[in-house]
Picture: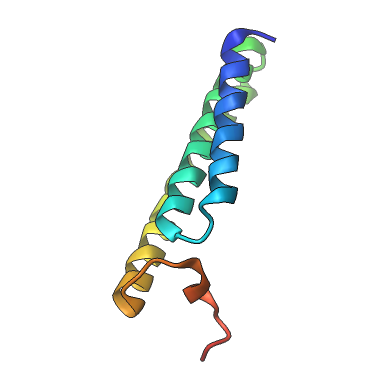
Length: 98
């Protein structure tokens, strides 16, 4: 395992740890989730460059598209929650409060 791959895995674990520690605020959770997606994108890019299959070059791009969609939905949810409740706590997202 190269030092680059090890650093990317450590970055993923740190973002996962941040997601577990700061899970009460939506903004912190979204930032940690973006860090996880960025490290997965870099790892997928390195793996696809090491493989010689041409079909594997499409996977990092698809992962990046899903990360952009996740960021857009997350920010829309953050704006909706902060406008409705005035704070970004995750416990405000209970959908059973009709």
